[in-house]
Amino acid sequence: MTKKSLPYLATGGDLKDLEQPGFYPGYSTMAQKRSWEDATRKTVTKRVTETAPIRFFSEKEATLLRAVIDRVMPQDDRAEERTIPILSVLDERLYKNSLNGFRYEDMPPDREAYRLAIKAIEEMAQHRFQQSFHALTVHWQELILMSLHDGKPEPANAAWQEMPVRRFWAMLMEDCVTAYYSHPWAWDEIGFGGPAYPRGYMRLENGLPEPWEKDERRYEWNAPVDSLSELREESASKRGSEHDHKGSH
Image (cartoon, rainbow, N blue to C red; front, side):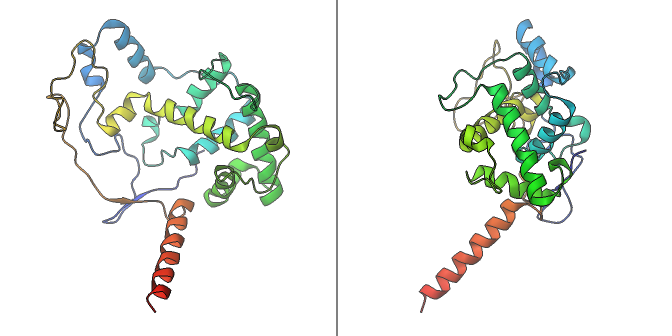
């Protein structure tokens, strides 16, 4: 079960249960599918209509990794039925043993790397908070993940002696971002026009939308109040203010 950490509008109120987040309300990539050739239409439609079952990860591994993904690529503002299945895409890649095109010499194979990391994250959670990672609060989950992001695992774990934590973090983020932004619902969110073949684009200058696209309609929003990113930003802002104040004397 996803632990919600909701962003909120600057004018007040949580951002949640949205069928289409982003600044392009009413835009639909799939509404353009008649203009695509058959192979593209089948490929893109499959991403919306089919979700591959979890076949590589065990149930426990999948539960933990889903909790990790919920924090590094949160979709808490989306309606449940419009959540992009990042874990499924990642699991399918590893099940088929597909590579991202390269592997660093100091990294184990991707399958082994993920299993090592999942084991390490669970052990870190148990050692630091005496609970499984998926059961931790959002704040505690983010403390562990932030330490991996920073390349300074807290607490230390033997797995990070077997592979560089920064390389694993980069692979995790590449997998999550690739899975998310290959999905038509993410294209709707950013106003991406979808496959251009065979129709093509006409308006290539001045940022003008195509006839089938929507104009951008922005709204101001803030990060969740329990987000470490938000707390870090506030802390940095305070330090900056103190520095400026001291420097003015």
